Figure 1 (cartoon, rainbow, N blue to C red):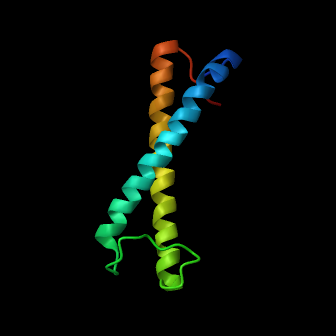
Figure 2 (cartoon, rainbow, N blue to C red; figure 1 turned 120 degrees about the vertical axis):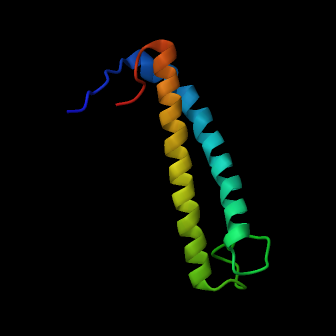
Length: 98
């Protein structure tokens, strides 16, 4: 059985700016991480990641890049959000979510 942590309105309000900053930071980190991973895994010699409106990349490569980028973004975001929530709980004694 899992224990559901309680959340007060004040904890949610206090956490909101922290969540916004961590969201921006996690997006930036995920973008950097994706570019580095794409450079290693890319079948082309291009430094750029394929974008939907760039005709020099085949659709398969664009879709693969988008899927990898989405997975990296979601993973980094979840790790940062969870870490931030745990740190908030240690400092303030309340879980900021739910």
